[in-house]
Length: 337
Image 1 (cartoon, rainbow, N blue to C red):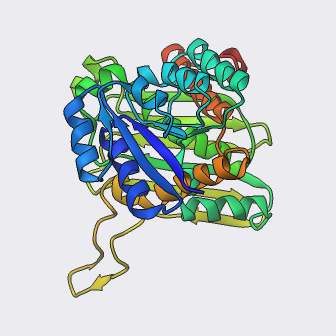
Image 2 (cartoon, one colour):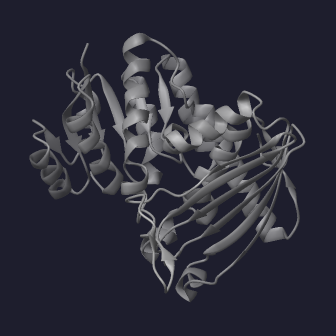
Image 3 (tube, rainbow, N blue to C red):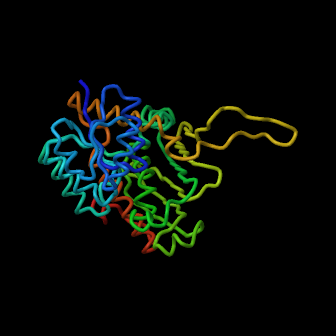
């Protein structure tokens, strides 16, 4: 069975998914594209030979030839579009976060539950082979009982200030991936969050009400302790690493590079910089997450990343924001987990 997909949002991540569906997933077909910027929808449709484009997302949801909906539009539209797609009986893939407040998330998840449609949230890093192997090392006891987790997540450059003003901030637009990854890697819930942050990259980010540098301490239900360090700018490229230390050993996932060459001379031992940003670093994971969504829909199995996974990551992000604001550890239950 070929799954016909309608794409809502033809921005940066939407185009990544359009390329993935049309070029790498033979069991899916992209049949419609919507973007409030109709020129972006047209450009995406023309580039990937999609037969229909529009500025109206509802027109995509309503089309009878659209079997499932991929939501890649701005964050403030995610929850309403999830509700609309659920009411239309369409399976849904939605980029993170579902929304920036829990009331909107809960309305969307309730609509999905009432309609009985599948919903998968776009935490693509779960599908990265490096992190999957790290998870398996923990799950299969190769490193024994987990004691410490450390995640490094640093972007090569900050996003535009206009994006930062509406994104929900570092904890909800960037570190949210790392909160989900922490739960995924350890297979345990986060119970307490203590975050500290600063503006070390660009004063304009502080003027917009956000931070650009943070360290977050996590306490897990299984007793493990975790740390996440985030920066909006790593001058050497996209820094994506994780390490779990346990009673029997340690497992590490290091950066991906464009090649494996190490050049040794009388002056230095060096290699090329890491892959520069998420479009290069995580291209395989984007393919695998869409393949998993298509398989779940066509085979009638639960999607591997649920709406509840999406909600919990936002709860942790809100806990981190409160911790930063109040200068204290925050129990996740205080937020509404």
